[in-house]
Image (cartoon, rainbow, N blue to C red; front, top):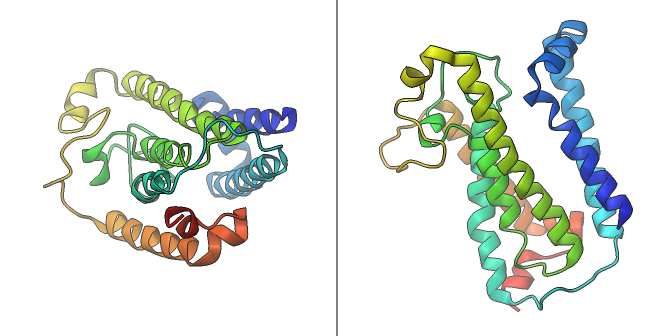
Length: 223
């Protein structure tokens, strides 16, 4: 259990780097933006793999008995979460986490919420708590969820400070939480995110989740 907590702490510390402008700026200055993004992506993937490995190695301590209906919570929330993460990462966003260069432009998904990546991660994480029902999953996915909420608050303060007097004009038509998705429009990142989400869901439900994590979501949902 201690190694799982250590891995979670390293994950949170690593993913706090983009939220610290001074540190992120120094790294980009020394490494170059492209090298920084590649290196950060590789390290993040390795740490995430380590975190899941430690979770799978941690003893199972049941907190409640899983039921088939709980898996449908994951089927509902996880795809929405993945879509928000994908669309947020590839869309320009002056308010929050994105892989795009810092800019005043914003993608269509930002009209839905100023923090699509963080809210998407939150939905994906919370969707995985109920069907697992054990202590290690509560620590892992609960930790992800709390980290996402903290990230929303941190990014909101950061963007307000950066935009200053322009905040009111920039934030008009956006929301800290979620606005009505009808009528926000479509752009290339949203279409691409839909395709990536569909591919990821098909891959996971088609056996990928079982191969990677030893759990078949379809079998859980059907009892």
